[in-house]
Amino acid sequence: MAIISIRDLVVEYDGRRILDSLSLDIEHGETMVFLGGSGSGKSTLLRQIIGLERPKAGSIFVKGTDITRCSAAELKKVRRSIGVAFQSAALFNSLSVADNVALTLREHTRLAPSIIELMVWMKLAVVGLADFGKLHPQELSGGMKKRAAVARALALSPEILVLDEPSAGLDPIVAAELDELILFLKEVFEMTVIVVTHEMPSAFRIADRIAMLYKGSFRLVGSKDEIRASQDPRVRQFLDRVPGNIAETPAVAAHFEQYLQAQEA
Amino acid sequence: MANVLEDVGKKTISHLDYVGSVNIQWWATLRAVGSALPFVGNRYRWQASVQQMLQIGVDALPMVALMAICTGFILAMQGASELRRFGAIHYVIDLVAVGFTRELGPLLTAIAVSGRSGSAFAAEIGTMKVSEELDSLRVMALDPIEFILAPKYLAALITVPCLSILSNVCGILAGGLFMFLSTHLSPILYVRDVFESIELRDVITGLIKSVAFATIIAQVSCLEGFRVRGGPDSVGRSTTSAVVKSTFLVIVADAVFTAIFYFTVQH
Image (cartoon, rainbow over all chains, first blue to last red; front, side, top):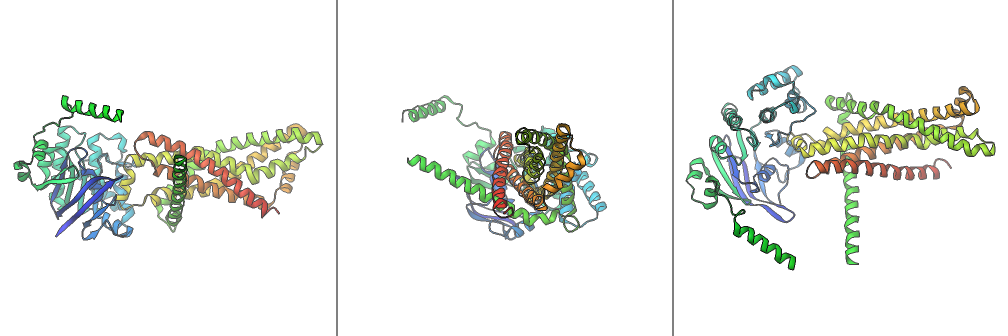
C-alpha cells in the first residue's frame, strides 16, 4: 500500500494554476525525486505533501489520513511521522545545533534529559556533526547547516523524510556527500524519502523513481532508466540542458512588440 | 465616485480583516497561554517566558524609570507655574500623584514597551517567517502561537503592570524632588500627602489599563510579524508598523478606558 497517495491535486494562487490535477502514489521505502525546472511547481507540491498549504481541489493521503481535510490534531499526528529539511535549513538561530535537534524530542516525548542528549548525539553522529552540537547555526558552513537540518528531521525517527533542494548552493563534493548520506539513511532506517531537486546527477544517484514536473503537471513518472530513455521533448530538453529561447533575437523582438502594442492600447 | 467607494470598501474590509485577525490570534493565545505557566505548563515554555520577562521588563527598567522621572519633573514644573499664581502650589502633589497613578505611569510604560519590545517581537517573528523557521515549527507539529506568542504574552502581562508601578513611583518621587527644591517641602510630608491624594481604585484602574496595553502590544506586534510576506524589507516594514499600530491603539484604548472609569468608577 502506498504511504503517500496524491489524487487529482489542484493548487491555485490568486487564480493562477500552479499544480494541475496531479496524481501519484509513493510506496513505502522508496526514494521519490521530484525533478523539474524553476517554477515547475515542485516546491509547491512539497508544501502540500507536508500539510503547510491546503489545495483548491484533490486529496493527499499520508499513511491513510487525508491531510487536506483532516483536523488540526490529526495533522499534528501525521506530521510527527514526517521529518522535513528545508532548502534554507531553517534551523533556529537562537538555539545551538544540539538544541535544534533536541527540540522535537523534548516537546513530543517524555524521555529523560540524559536519554535525549544521547539521542541527539547519535543523530548528529549519523550526519557527521557529532563534534559540532554546541555551535549555533550561524557558525556552520552551508553544507553543515543542511546536514544539521537532516539531523533535526531525523530526531523523531520519522517514516518519511522530505528534503527540499538538499544540494542547492553546495559545491559538488559536499553535494555528493549529502547524496551518500541520503542513501545511507534510506538503507539504515528504511525510510520513504522524498527529494525535491533540479540537480540531475543527484537525482539519478539517489532516486528509485523520478517524477518530472513541467508547468504544474507530471510530464513523466518512472524509474531512472525510463527517464533517461524518454523521448518526451520537455524531458529531453531538461536532461540535455537545451536552453529556452528567451535570449534569442526573435523572442526579444516579440516581447518588444508586445510591449509597444500594450503602450498603444 | 465609484473608485472612491471601491477604495473605501477595500479599506474597510482590510481594517475589519485586521481586527478579526487580532481577535482570533488573541483567542488562540489565551487557549495556549496555560502551557507557559509554571508547574502546570510546559517547563521549556515557562523558561522562555522568564527569558522574555527579563527582556521586556528588567532590560527596560532604566529607560522606563528615566522617562518617568523626567515626565514627573516636567509635570510638577508645568503645574507649579500655573498653580503658584493662585496660591495653590500644594495641588501639584495631587496632580502628579493622581496623574501618574491613573494615567501617565501605564501610558509611558506602554509607549516604552511598544518601542522596545513590540518592534523586537515583530522583527523576531518576521525574520522567522522569512527564513522558513515558522514553517519548520509547523512541520515539527509545534504550534507557533503556543511556542512563540504564549511566552511573550505571559511575560508582557506580568512585566508591563510591574513596570507601570515602577513608573508611578519614579514619577511621583520626581515630583517630590521638585517640591523639595522649590518649596523645601519635606519628603516625609510629601509622601504622606501623596498617600492622601491617591486611592486604591486609582491604582487598580491604572493596573487594568496596563494589562490591556500589554495585550495590545503583544498581540499587534506579533501579528505584524506573522503577516510578513516576502523578503527582509518586509520585516523592516512590519517592525515599523508594529510600533505605530500598537502605540496608536494603546492611546485609543487609554481614551476608552479613561472614559469608562470617568463615567463609572469616579462618579
